[in-house]
Amino acid sequence: MLAKAIDPERIESIKAGIIAAVAGIAVSLVFVGLDSLSVLAQPLSQSVMFEAIQRVAVAAVCGFLFGVTYRYIVRQDQNPHLRSGAVGAFALTRGLSQLENVDLSALVLSGVVSLAIPLVESFGLFLAIRLVLDFGLKQQWLKPFMTMPTQDSR
Image (cartoon, rainbow, N blue to C red; front, side, top):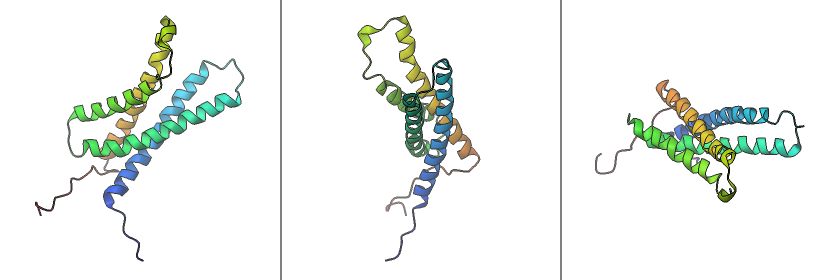
């Protein structure tokens, strides 16, 4: 049985996903580093290390999925609302999902700030990934998704 050639569009999507995952890891490491500054006085425990690794891994997966999706969303369209909307949709979905199990009745003023942190981190993460992907598209390291002609238009 002969191996089928991989569709070039899929290859470009995988490239976009990998670039986005690497950018997501880098941004996540910055956030983990900033977060660890607040707990420097405490010894580094195994659970803190596991949580940091988990945060970076989740950011990598989210980045990969965002990269693949972003390439399809923007296509060859220069509409900035599509780009911003993609960032907003992913950031709100990721940020708000982290707040699902928070007891809102126990909030005080300092709690409101801690609720904003996942949203700010998510927007920062996806905005940085978007900028990297836009740069990659501009430099032609990535190709935008090409709408394939339909049977009728050939």
